[in-house]
Length: 150
Image (tube, rainbow, N blue to C red; front, side, top):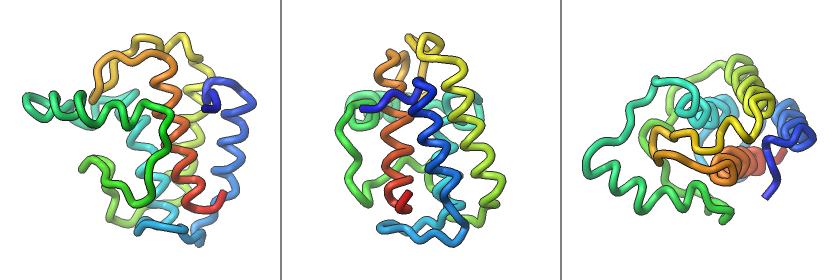
């Protein structure tokens, strides 16, 4: 899997994001381009803010036992796979705002570097190593950018 913390890879991802237009149509799924960008931003909101609650109790156990590996492994996401409630974006979003936010998050992660994320706690999965953070960030972005043909 490509290393999102590598500047050339993060620049490539930003270039793909820049190619998106508000009119871009998905090859699968129901989100429009602005909703997809907002959906991708949730991953970074969960890494850098307290905007989304941590799973608790039984849900915490289920997420860590059954969801974590699917998210942090190198295995690609299947098309039209289910997502957690906080990732569901059904309202209208500003394409320009969400695009700007996502590019800023990708650049922030690259500038912080892999070492910053090694052992950093995930709101959903607990502490992750650098490889797991990379896989989560890159795989999710690649999945949705591919969904929109960029």
